[in-house]
Amino acid sequence: MSDPGDRGRIWLEGLLARLGLPTQVQAQHDPIDNALNYWLTIDGSPWSPEQITSVVGEAGVTLDAMQYLANMLLNVGVDRDDHCGYTIELNGYRAQQRAELESVAANAVSQVRETGESVAIDSLSSSQRKQLHAMLAAYSDIATHSEGQEPHRRLVVALKSTEA
Image (cartoon, rainbow, N blue to C red; front, side, top):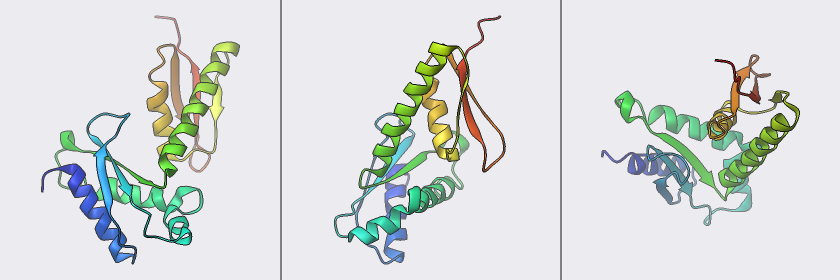
C-alpha cells in the first residue's frame, strides 16, 4: 500500500484493536500544514469517557507516545523525501492544543514587538516547540530558537536582527 494516509489509518486501527479498543480512524491531509502531513482522527464514539481519557493520557502523554510511534514506524524504509508527518487526534484534543499554541505564539509576538525584548516559553514538549517554531516562521520580523537541555528546554522568541 503506497498511500501514507491509508498506511497510517490501518496501522493506528491495528494498534487500537490490539489494545482492546477497536474503532475506526479517518486519515486526511493536515488542513494547515503541507500535503506530506496527515491527521489520523480516532473515532472515540464507541468508547467510554474513561477509555478516551486513558488514550489521551495525562496532558496528552499517551496520545503523544502513539503519535511518536506512528511518525517513527510509518517512515521506516521510506525514502527521506517521502517521509510524512502524522498527527493523532481524539475528541478535538489536538485541535484545542493547536489553538492554545496559536494563542501563545500571538501573545509572544505581541510582547516581543512591544518591548523589543526576547520572550522565553517554558514547559513545552518537543512537539509543541516544533509546532511553535513553524507557526512563528510566518512572521518576517520574528526569529526563534530553542535553548537549554531537556526537561528544561525552552523556546525563545525575539525580533530578527536588522544588521546585515
